[in-house]
Amino acid sequence: MEAPGLLASTLGAVLALVLGGLANWQLRRPFHERLWPGVPWLGVQFCAAVAFLVFAAHLVTLLTGHPLTGRTGI
Image (cartoon, rainbow, N blue to C red; front, top):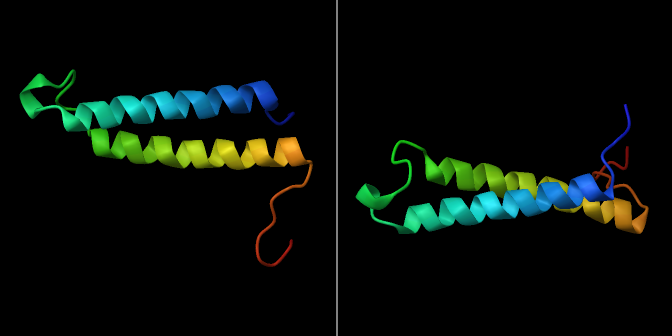
C-alpha cells in the first residue's frame, strides 16, 4: 500500500484545520445556541489538533525528503 501523497496530506491538514475551527467556534457560543449540543466539542478540537500535527509532520517529510526520526534514530 502506498503512502498518501502531497495532495492527500494537504487536504487532510486543511480538513483538520476547518474541523478545529468549527469546534472552536462552537465552544465560544452559549450552550443553548450550539448546532449539536451533545457533541463534545473540546474533544473534537483536540482530535483535530492531533490530526493537523500528524499531517503537518508528514508534509514536512514529503517536502524536505528527509523522514522524521526519533531520538534513537531508528
